[in-house]
Length: 278
Image 1: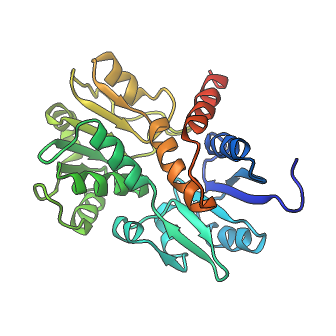
Image 2: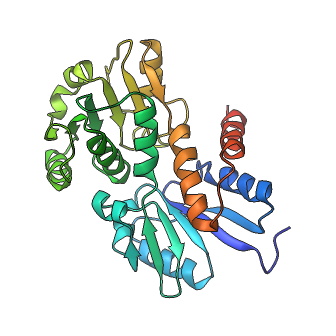
């Protein structure tokens, strides 16, 4: 039961109705007997500052931040952790008396998952996109020493991302022409979709993209996206948005509550939410 002492948490984004974070975090609260509730909070572009101030005034204890707000939220924090500062985006906010502490749990989550999938120094990686999710992936790939190429529809966005990366143990990152996307995909060992392609209203994209056996396809968008479907048909390995969601969510949960996350229950809740939408 929700009462006057129930702690409030949520995820802000646009769109956000599709988010599985409420099911995931509410399952974790229930498993550990924490009196808390987690909500999906739609926030239009341009209204983020007002929304974060309002959530703080209403007593929210923590927030997650998703598309399209991760970069903008960074500037609205009282302080940020080292990873968020280097990535240039936040996805987790923790309440303080004066405002919000900002963290990036996407980047360490993606690094853990990529490393477990065999990404190491010299692995040829292609990153599509330059927004908040893509920045987290770029940080993770650079930290692992991958030979990273970044491509976007706007070349200046790729240039900005590449030039803003701290040096890693691998080759210097480069930009790649979006016009040569299909050829770049064919040459890569790892291909990451860090764009909104696959979300509601953004279903189309990457026409003609094809993969090969042994490649690793990574998609931040969860669900059965066309990007992952093309990879699966070709026998490529898949790292799904759900995998990233659960791992970063577990890290965020620990920041929110100071307790270890029941990751198995969180993963089961995400899987159940996926089944209910089929």
